[in-house]
Image 1 (cartoon, rainbow, N blue to C red):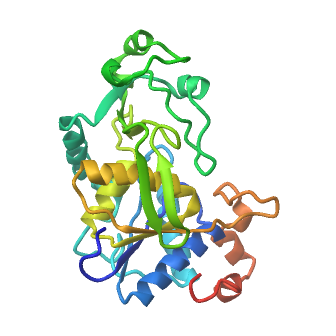
Image 2 (tube, one colour):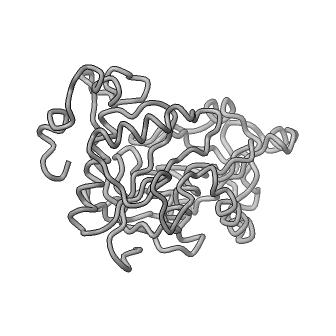
Amino acid sequence: MNSAGPYRGRLAPSPTGYLHLGHARTFWRAQERARTGGGALILRNEDLDAARCNPEFVGAMLEDLRWFGFAWNEGPDVGGDHGPYEQSRRTDLYRAAFEKLRAGNYVYPCACSRRDIQAAGAAPHADDDEVIYPGTCRPQANLAPPSRGLVPEVAAARPPARRAWRFRVPDEEEILFVDGNFGRQRFVAGRAFGDFVVWRWDDVPAYQPACVVDDAAMRITEVVRGADLLVSTARQLLLYRALELPPPAFFHCELLRDAAGRRLAKRQAALSLRELRARGLQPPELRFGWGSGG
């Protein structure tokens, strides 16, 4: 684990909508853990997806976080020694990591469409949203005969420009880690998650490698985030190993849910920090009951 030096935590919102109360509670825990650890808090703007990110939401994100009571030591608005703090300006780092993965034979091109994968893939893990990739484009030497889905010849016939690159997971390997909140975690590669995209068909790095590269480069010692990303941690630990980078510690928080038990989403504008502020609510009353740890 990357435990050398003082504590360094981070907030990593994506400007694809207004931040909601669930974001705030997880971020508050991150801030409290950084303060308790006597360390620094870094704000990173995860704006890689140009089609979904909006400059309006960047400004709103900074304003809403400040209003709620957040203060960070490094970030896009205050600078720091590990910038730039916008992912859209860090593409060279991601590309270098991708080339290392490709040189190590950890990745392969994939021409399957989202529709193909939805139709042929296995159901995702209970805490994950990503359908398990059926292995259609995986090199034949490492691929068991598929029971369903596209045959490789069909996928290979698609134009190269429409191909993504997937990380080949070591099937049946147990990925073990101890979460700071939920304790011992175990995921079996190939069952809990399948081969995952590291470079998208539109020449944009995917979430998993970008997150790994940034957390390592920014010397993050602990990642605090929602429990919906527990499976992502298993994926990312494989990337840390392949890239020969020390992983941070992980602390996953319970998700804030609505009255129907559904986790909050940005489309639920009624619980956005912006809307709550417009109603006259104040941060201390919104944080009531969170405790010192958020």
